[in-house]
Image 1: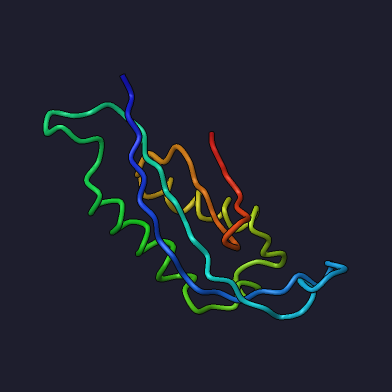
Image 2: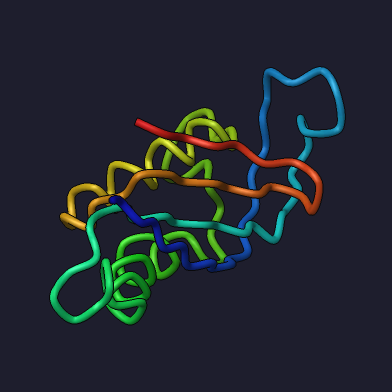
Length: 115
């Protein structure tokens, strides 16, 4: 049996999409909500992963990097899809065993990545 655990985070960031024909062409910001899911077997201590370990990795690798930043300084085309992919790479590199990333750009719009 495999079990998944999810921890939610938020950060504020600004970006602009110069190619966009609508409002997103202009500088604007979002309160991003990030859900990081880790999947695996329940271990000897009765957990898949300690929530504190998930928090430490994501805050170090993602929140501390992007919070209150201009995302165009990190990538040329900071769409939600491409930002979620960068977040996946950062969390995966930390050997967290990520199985899903959900990045909410607005309260009713999100991008979901799975392997």
